[in-house]
Length: 110
Image 1 (cartoon, rainbow, N blue to C red):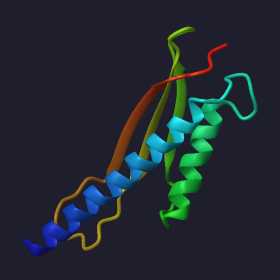
Image 2 (cartoon, rainbow, N blue to C red; image 1 turned 90 degrees about the vertical axis):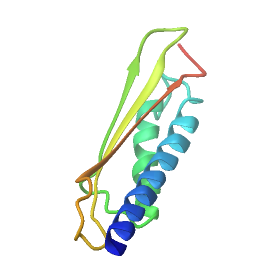
Image 3 (spheres, rainbow, N blue to C red; image 1 turned 60 degrees about the horizontal axis):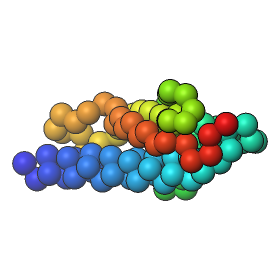
Image 4 (spheres, rainbow, N blue to C red; image 1 turned 180 degrees about the vertical axis):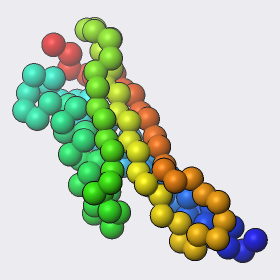
């Protein structure tokens, strides 16, 4: 059971990292002008990839999707992230993929 605690602790740690990085990236991206370069969606994707790589996470299999939902004045940026999970020990069943989804209203809507 010690191995289960270690593996599941790692699951929750990685999941928290993923959620924190996604929240920070979408928070910054939501302040950008939608017609600017980079767009909020592109900025969010790039920030998530860069921040996870800086944490030492292999982003080669990372899936990040950023889409706009709704229309002005209540348009939302929605970001979905899927990261394959590699357990520390692997003797206990853990998720194969960690997923998160964060949405935020765009502050500067066109």
